[in-house]
Image (cartoon, rainbow over all chains, first blue to last red; front, side, top):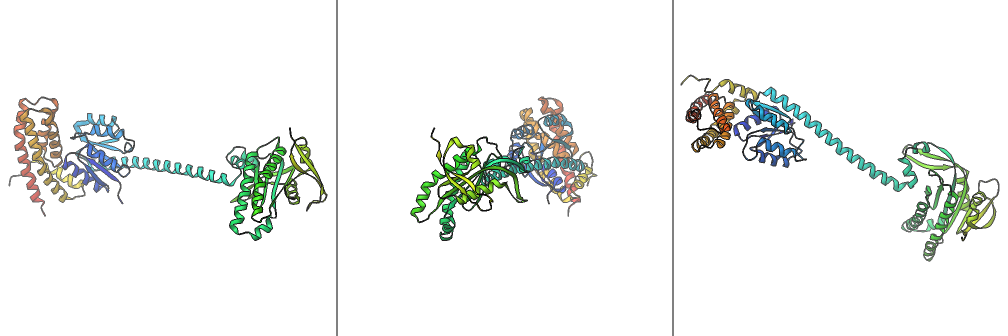
Length: 363
Length: 125
């Protein structure tokens, strides 16, 4: 393997031959240039391959000083180490070259051990520079990947949760806490039958439109989507972002969903699918935080309030938005409701009084 | 054959040169060949600059000949070339010293060439 590539710049063929041969003896590959212009051309053609330049000072066309100055003004090649090669009596010109940015110097006749030491030092510096560049490039790539993954991830998560992931208090919230929430559960009447009969494309088309509609409403009202399960969509309010008006937001969202669902339902009806929307809303304390296992966590809510919303939704007739007594009490002046009496819900020991939201109270 | 004169060609320089390229005397022979091909060009440039009294034009060929002659151990010639280079740099090449150097440099080269060719014969094959 080559120890590196050196560019020998000298107008004297004899000097080039000697230096090239000595460098080859040290294990380097050598390119040659007979003046500064020629050297710049080669450097610009191989900016990443050339590891070190051995530069004569007195040359036609473009001398060593001009070559160095041009190199230092070129961002692509300025980092390549330059060793000035000169006669002992020309030390003044060496000083000028060092001031212009040369890395080191060699005097003629070239002593092989000194050449080796100078070359190794320059190659070391160049390797360090290359490593640094490589590291920076990887870092940039990594950052881009993280950004891409973050934005990709945020498509899977509710905006509140994805914001939480990158916030300082997020970790504390993720580890579990108890809070009052409003849970909203939406699902479709007639979905099971539809799912059995429809073609997969049709099924996904309908589900997609329905999820899109609900998704938009969730985002508008700043709810936290907990999960989708087929036609069942569980959303809650007041966590992780606290919302004093969480019940009202839940009701407004449910009404928006119901309104927008109408045209879809009519459309599907024409195609022979009888699908209706049912919504359940409950208020209560839940335990919230990271649920799942390494590799697949969800931000979830656990508690009776969630079950209650889900059961109410199952009991709701088409287009009903059922509120628990407590939820209703918290938005009483804002909505018009009809009593639906006490419902006997699966898993609940006592009958539950419920209210169906008709509309927002006209102001 | 005349006895080699180390003031004309220092064979120690050639030995060191060979050692610095891994003992490759074939390379040194090749290098001497190149030197002998190129030197007359520099000598002609030097002569032209001397004739026209162009001090600036004297510097580069003298410099190059100084350096390449030193590389092959032609020390006397290298010293002469150095003297001319300095004169060129000073801008003053009308003096006696320079006239003498310009006069003598051709003979210096002829002497160096003879010794270098002898070295080549000694190291042929």
